[in-house]
Length: 379
Image 1 (spheres, one colour):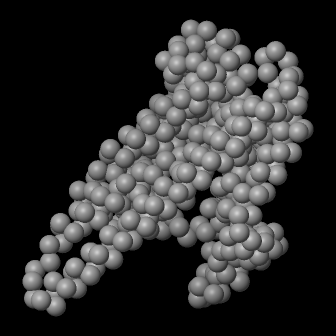
Image 2 (cartoon, helix red, strand yellow):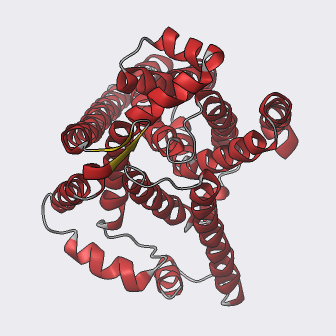
Image 3 (cartoon, helix red, strand yellow):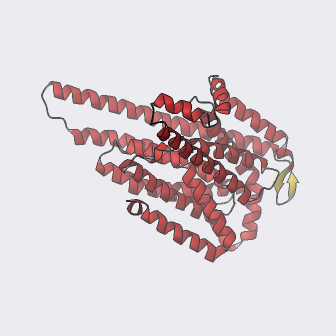
């Protein structure tokens, strides 16, 4: 079952890592591997959410999402989007950006280095908002209860995450951005960092708004479908399940695509904290995206991986760490191996905590959902 579901992902992983080592050496092998692990971990909650929604679709729409949807996810978000970010930030065309990376790597590196403060501010703010919205929300399961409980209480204040993010942006612009690292040395990039950071914040709010819009449309469609089904049953008429499911599934598909794009942002932008090499980035993120698809299929069929309740916490703490690192790299260089390792360690710790929790629950004889909350909050 595992080999059938993850077979393509395993094969692409082996081919991708072998190609990276052959083409660019062992450093590329390590960076691509770290990017793959990070993408899988950061998108784990994506797979869980996708699976929960995908179960509501009929077989036709499930196939559409897992074929056309994965093409959009892999080639659109993980391959095209990083190139687009570099092209916009460096003020060159996307084709020119790829050609420079292939033919003039030194000039490409200089352009990306000059554009890095803008990329770091944009990405840092986007990732920071994801982390803040997560940490300020009250949840049943708490990984670091001593930290998450008081922050959840603070989260009841309206727009707190936006206010905190803007304060962080101002501090970054007044400290790191005044001596930003570029190919010409340390220069003042305060205005660039401020504008790019605000753009990252606006992008997050727009993406969240679109997700909310399609979610509301989906709820309206499901409610209408239920009412029509009840009316048809009351009148003794046959219910056209295929037609109703197909229309609702269309909104499901649109909602899933917007949701997948929003989940993809954190992996793509977080990758810039690890490397500026768009080919390493695309390869690592592409491998990770294949596992997201496989995880989604596995969850639809088995529904077991969501037992590891702290993985979502670990992934979001990794996002928070990447956000801070991106903002720090406006002025200071940080090794990509250190950056990647921090995220992997946080996610590994969250997985280990999840396993410990499951063992404790098993030893206690299972327990109710309320018992689970008590067990998890002490970790």
